[in-house]
Length: 129
Ligand code: FES
Image (tube, rainbow, N blue to C red; front, side, top):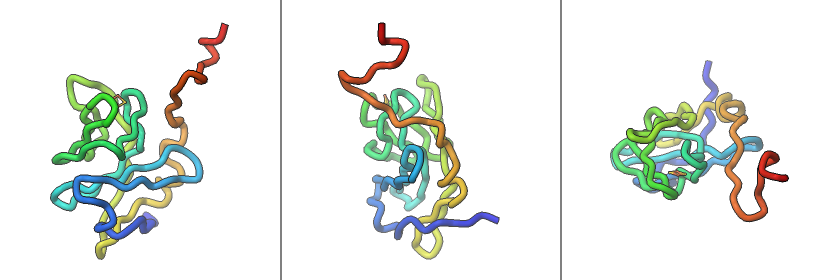
């Protein structure tokens, strides 16, 4: 049986906006609300180069990444053509005006994906001579 964790009242998420839910381990989860008061949850990490989807523009059942404008489906986490890739989605629901996420998924899902890092001091092991 699913254990649901209350995240916030739905009105705490702006219409066509999002709220970021931090986790003790792993990348945060972005919870989105569209114009029909539908709520969706995706890992806050664009499948392109890791941009923060929580800062993107929500339209319909999609979000446009703020970095390079890829469109990601909120309902399936998939990039829209011609782009390719996907981001993990999370089960969520609204009950009595409260947004809820699956507690088990929140604690265990997609923990292997690291937050993106950028800047002049960042290098991968293969890039160091
Ligand atoms: S990081 Fe999202 S479109 Fe490039």
